[in-house]
Length: 413
Image 1 (tube, rainbow, N blue to C red):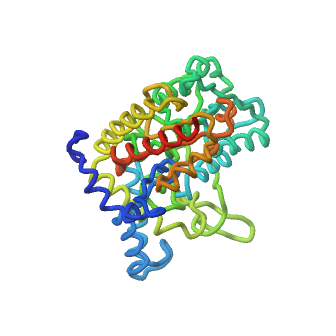
Image 2 (image 1 turned 90 degrees about the vertical axis):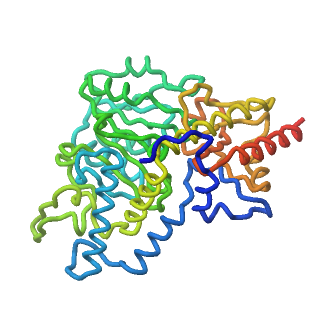
Image 3 (image 1 turned 135 degrees about the vertical axis):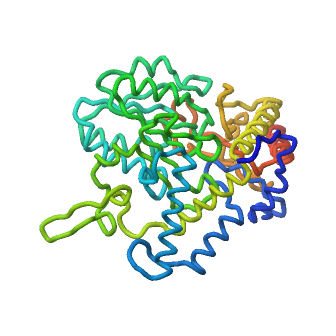
């Protein structure tokens, strides 16, 4: 990666040129895209990789000896190797391609969960989880007779780590938590969380959908058992994601789906299953998506994730400082350990009305419960407004956003 750059010499305007959609006009105004936690935009380099695949390589993989099949297979498996390196996995076989974070979590619930979690066992989640990291475990608990326990979220938007310690015990079989909250932007203390889980013999899954494009991740250094993320939140296409699992755990787990590629031999009486990671990848995969994800990693590496993260943190601090100047604006994340997200309420205005007003100004934010209804209930609100930034956003965009919020505030008086 490049040497760490300061905020002052981070060439954000140069990087913005890589994203065609940022030239879009909304209601005659320049698009200000502050919905990056929902999905990031795609650089031309990633778009070109998809066009090139479908124009010059398109073929199914692992199943033919002709040139296009060999090329497609090489690029697909090369993507697996690149992703393994990006997150510090020991071997590419620990990388399973899925459609996204939701499928990755469901895969673990249906395979590891059904095999190793039973009646009376306990699973620890938190009140800030995305629905994708709640519902699969509720379904598992219903099937297997397990018990779900939840770590409370404090009023400043951080986890109650003392409660986490109280919840852990010898019956805890799994802890599944978000690395970075999609609704609050809270960065959870994952090293401490992982260490305490392992101290009672529990396995841990990290939902890293909001972390993987903003925080350097080394799965070996973290000693995490499972890690899930989606490509579309890190400048890659939709419909592609990754489950990382420690090799020995994946090896013990049964297949998730049945079909082609995940088998070694099939007879009318039964089947034997393929080796890792193929036993979890039934059917024709999203080949173009995997190649696009590899291209997105190349793009991130060309800038340097540390450089992007440093710029984003400076921009987020600027956004928070400006937001605090608006009377009547309430923030839901009030601690310093945060990333990329400004969750807020403006006076008595409904979040959807705020979002509609901003959209008319060309400013895209997210409103609603952010697939985190238990968290909304915790804060006694039906929903929140959420502005989420990334490295291609600018201080000028923040100033326009803050000016628009101030205008709404004046209208409310």
